[in-house]
Image: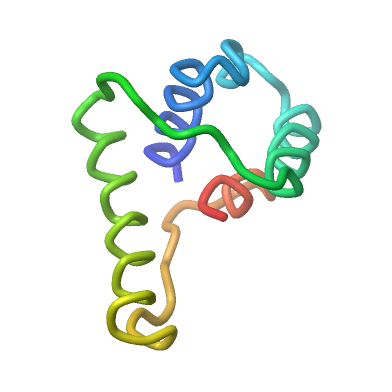
Length: 93
């Protein structure tokens, strides 16, 4: 889950949505992520990401592509190891 947290922090900073995600407390993260999930559309991600963040983002891009090109059922469950906070679940949504 820490890799997802780092990736979300980097993506939020890169898109200008939030530059201090990693310094936020759990309640602030949950509020921000919930607000972002209810947004009609999030901004596209342009720019250079760290290799770990890019790898995570590419996994989700592949999942989305498989669901469109193959079937909604083409990809099953996604396991997030070391999940300790609700924000860890929200980060992958």
